[in-house]
Each structure stands twice: as structure tokens, then as C-alpha cells.
Length: 253
Image (cartoon, rainbow, N blue to C red; front, side):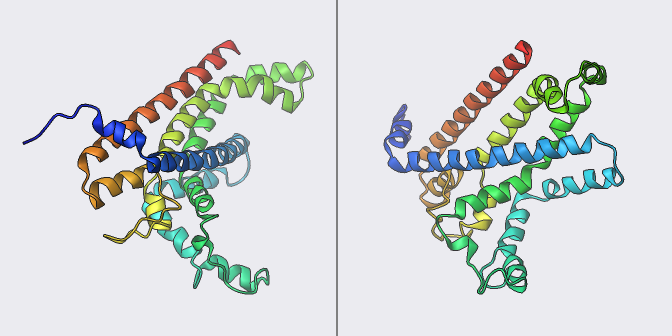
């Protein structure tokens, strides 16, 4: 018969060292992905506010990686980085940069870095759209007045554009944190193997893959359910911090 055990599953998770290892790895993926995404997105958003030939085409092309499912992006990058027939190895070999093919995805020290690169490629379009919308909502009168007063482009960006972009940054940071923190598809197709019943790569095992392992491999449904709630609460907590702090900073500015 079912038996009520209270918070026992939560205490088991917290006392398990593997939980803390995969949590730290999830945060590592976030810390590598978010700066890359936001820097690229901000640069592209600033570029797309300018008028130049082919701007509409560039805006369309930027959306393509985001339109593809993450699992497809994972397989595409797995093919590009393949150590035997990958396109990246072929290009570098033809250019004379490498003498022999490199097994990019088999090095445990760089696997998480490649995960962050592919996640950035998959997701950068969304924060670009958010920041572009924020830039286009800034009144041009403010920038023109600052220019008349002798402000340089950097001063206008630092003192006007950046503070007014904080609400957009809050939205982009929140959504992209959740996407990176709960990453599954990219890791599964890129480094985890993805074969039914096979072992999950321990060097790229994050919270979501650990959750999958508990529920579908070990059939420890109670622990998996408890971990799902912990992931939800952690994501909500960080999202609330991002939104409140950045919005408050925008209001003060």
C-alpha cells in the first residue's frame, strides 16, 4: 500500500553528493551560456537598429537556429564536431591548421564548453529579439538631446541606453537562465549518447539528465518527482531575483 513519507525524498536528494555535483554542473553551463548569449544578442540588436542593405535578410537568418528544435541543433553540431568525418575537422585539415582529426567531443575537459557553445547558438535569437524591441522603444529625442549636449556614443549608451534596457535584460536573463538551467536536448544528442539503456555521460550530466536517470533508468519515481520540484523552485527563485533586481535598478536609473 502507498505510504506517506513526508519530505524524505527531498532529504535523500540533499544528502546525495551526486545531486550537488550535477547542480554545480548545471550552474556551470548557465555561467558559460548566459554571458555568451547576452553579449552576442546585444551586439546583434545594436547592429540591427542601424539601417543597412540586407537588414531584413539578416533578421530572418538570425531566427533560423532558434526555429530548429534543440535536438536537431544537437545532431547538426554533433556531425560538425565528429572526430572521424566532422566538417570542422575537414575544414581545419584542408587549411593546414591541424595535422590530424581532433575528437572534439570526447575530451571531458571541453565537453561542457561545447555544450555551452551549442546552447548559445540554439538560443541567441530570442534575447536578440527582446533587446531589439527594447532598443526600438527608447525615445530618439533622448539620444539626440544627449548628442547636442556633447555626449559621446559610449556615454549615451552607458547613461541612457543601458539603463532603459534593464527591463528587457531582466526578461532575457530570466528566460535564458531557465532554458540553460533545464537544458536536456542538446546534451542528450551531443555528448550523452542518447541510446536507450546506455550510460549517461558523467562529465555532462546536469540536473535534467539526472532527473531522467532517476525516473526512466532507475525507476525511482519518488526521487525524480522531488527533484522536479527542486528544479522548479530553484528556477523560480533565480527568476524572481533577476526580475526584481533589474527592474528596481531600471526604476532607480
